[in-house]
Length: 451
Image (tube, rainbow, N blue to C red; front, side, top):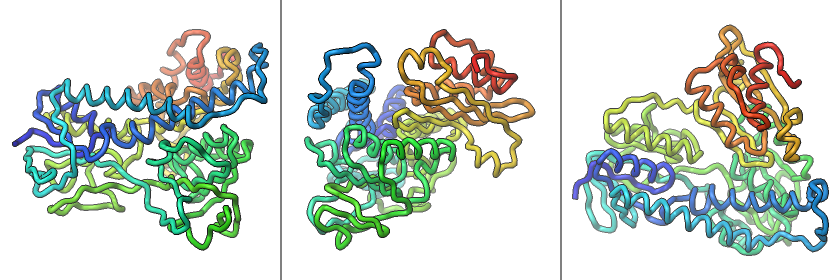
């Protein structure tokens, strides 16, 4: 059977591309070896965010119920039930994956279960079945590098973490990007003893250093034990009697969560793809060295964020149909579901300095925002980097309870190449958290109104 498009992988990059292809009338098939929705929906983005929301509610009840005038709560009787929180997450995951499957079928996408092997530029085999296509999109995602565990069941992979119903007291997490950071803070919020082994010199290496340092201070306040420049390839002689020794430090460890920076999952192939740093090498349009084969999402190594994978998938399908656009990854946000949340878009300060750009910084704190005060969430800010001469917005950084939602406004500003003057003139409803954008705009022009 011949298709216009075959997509390998049904995560956010793959299934979004498939739906778009179906909408454009392309005869499309999507191949999935495991669960529809891939890592993000099944054991990544969605269950982790559901658990974080449970932890945030738990912490708010413990810390703030009295301040909000709520009485009669015996805080000694309050505990966090990890199993029930995971059960809630499971319910959300099932609903989302069924929804994605429904949308695929609604758009006449054929779902093929099994392992895909690329045998030529235009053909793939799946479980001894041969299928052909004019175009192929590889959206096979990524996996954590393996940590060899010779001591038993100490190492827990992210994929298996949310199947557990009980969590021990001493948690060690290894990594340095958003997944590891979110997990470290989550377990700290539910009163676990957390050690974070950072595989590098700083956490959040892709973020502006201003954000990285801000989060570092939060971790220190929460007494999360951080050990930098660490890596583990095998757990063997450095683990004994519930303790892990790393870089001369001995820490209590009941489980070691493997959240190291993920590696690409490249499908088996009889044709040779060019690689770059272990990922499928692609051009600015996500094309591989074969012009009809695209690689989108984690597998190409340009980003490990689901929304960027989806954007790449849409871009590839549009290009196949002759719709040419520029794919500018700097205009897509970087989100961190920490507490408070963090997000950024555009250039960082270091990048602007390296480019010798003459820029200015305008910042406005949530502590001066009325809505933030009423909600009891005054930690955070909006920080705008703009070009001095014409005022073009070059980068935005946000720390706020809903920073991952608020960054969408900054995304719109940057897509339209707006200036700091446009930001200042954009009227926001009062009282809202989003007013801090307008205030930061005024700060960049003359001076903030409420500062």
